[in-house]
Amino acid sequence: MKRLFWLISLNVVYSTAELAIGLFTGRVGLVSDAFHLTFGCSLLTFSLFAMAASREKPDRFYTYGYKRLEVLSAFTNALFLLFMSFSIAVEALHAFIQDESEHKHYLIVSAVTNLAVNLIGVWFFRNYARINLVYRKVEDMNYHSVCLHVLADSIRSAGLILASWLLSLGVQNAEVLCMGLVSATVFMLIMPLFKASGGILLQMAPPSISNSALSKCWRQITAREEVSEISQARFWEVIPGHVVGSLTIRVKDGMNEHSVLQFVHSLYHDLGIQDLTVQTDES
Image (cartoon, rainbow, N blue to C red; front, side, top):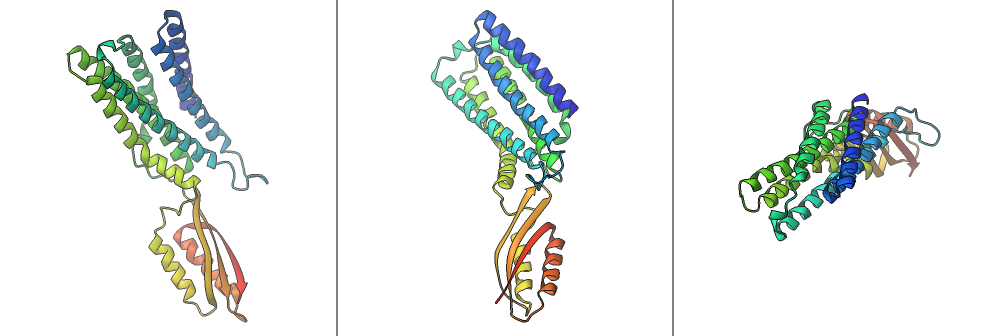
């Protein structure tokens, strides 16, 4: 958390300085980039808030606790980066339509400085600098989103620097090529996180448990002589690594439902489902 706090502070100082210089010199590009950084800082601040709030214990209003805030934070970061990827693609299209000789070279100084700031952030969270990361804890997902955030910003700045250098060499459509490449890279970089965090928020079936394993449990339960029917079987992740589920079992009249419940809980617990709610009805 301390490293994230210092990264946010560094970005706030830099974006404030860039905004002041942009307003003083009348450079619209600097002002626009400063607002982009400010919005990014607000998302990183939300990540920091989620990390702090997730430590609160469950209460009567939030019985599962506040850890899912970190999933929401990761999803928000991913959504912002997808939007950034789209905006860069639009920027590349605009550069293709417009005369590239109007490229504003004063933005390169800003891009170099921004790259240096973001590389510090990448170094802070280098352990999470992977595309497909296994989330053993909910904190892993949030830190991964922070790392991808600063990494995507670094790639964007590097793309601007490369485009400017190629333009100075006289390469045609250099900005279109570089910005298009940056857009595609950021999109591919962030999609796994977007799918993982979105899947948890939409209560998808847990990817850590295969459908064949769940079907096998279903067959084993229905094979018992006490059970006549299973229905409304639902399984999802509250946070990464915490799988919950619920199902309804219809037990035949006169049969011992206690032994059935014990068998069902044991079966699904072995699959990694920590919390299971089973409702029994008599047929």
